[in-house]
Length: 437
Image 1 (spheres, rainbow, N blue to C red):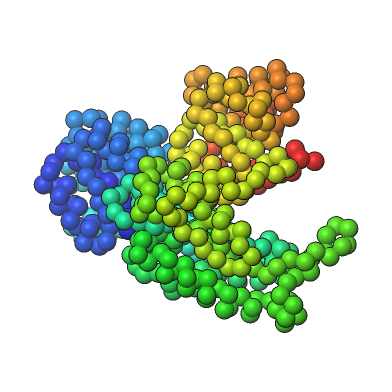
Image 2 (image 1 turned 135 degrees about the vertical axis):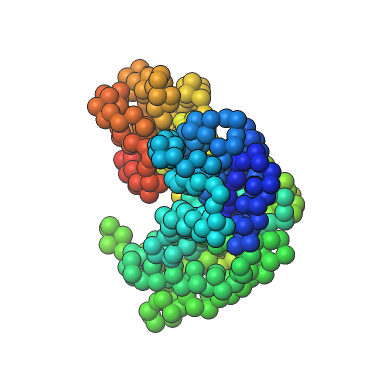
């Protein structure tokens, strides 16, 4: 399992092999590129947690680091520069270009290992959920991408708790957190060190394992969840088998007790080419499990498709994402789909006008675009001031920190990058509710 990944960019074959062996001895997966061009492909495929770059390259190391920072804006790996120089100005210049550390060669093997480990540890510290102490969605999407790009047999499981929002309303946040923590502990007990467990949201877990184990894990989880879940209810609710929920009109709604649903896909029957395809199939398969009234799992089989299994219903939950950064657009799309939104993504601004009238999005996420042209601002003005019938709310994301400029262009929200996904989807929820009255 490619949980911790390091990319070494060094044209010196002997040195790169030496560093590779040092890191692999402590369980880190290592990829090696002998030139900068080759490294770009590996960065895109595996999104390394740390990049070691040597000034042995013919490409200027400071420019290379600057480009890496731009190209890995969303994944933010740690960058360590290697150099035979020990001059203080060289160190300062390279650190100013975006490197996190500078190591003068020759370097002691133990120190090299310790520094790499420390940087990776710091990198992962920001990925953990406070409630479950599992790796969050950002890390989980990265692990899935690495898995499908690695030539091995795999299965991915999407696991969640149904009716949790009603449980939370009745029993409170503390009880809900305890339920989530208990289920995460159950899932941990069902997997081993070769598997991955993380979260795609506060309430959705993901397990990456192999084809042989996936169904056995799912069977155990359904049994174990149903065995312990009664401990989280009052005796009255357990006895009658459902909860009473009070609506705004004081009428009582009967809501079933929480269950677990699990969707499983693998590369056993179908070849997956990218993360977007994996997420789409995973969500569709998971929907089939959610249709059942009891805890259940559904495993992807030959000739089974659930792409259109759920009929779209009002209110309008359409979201349009105009984000040139492919990695970020995939992350936004996948998270939005998990939360029940219908999503379309465009990577070229002009594509918006060809689909917007028929698609009629409630919310548009619009990026500013190139910092020189700010094409997104022009598009925003056209949408708000020239399309009189458009009622969409526009969330404008940008690295250009000029709130007045953005809001004057017609945006409903100015959201500077980088932003937290929880913040983004909090605003999406609010605007979606406002749109639907």
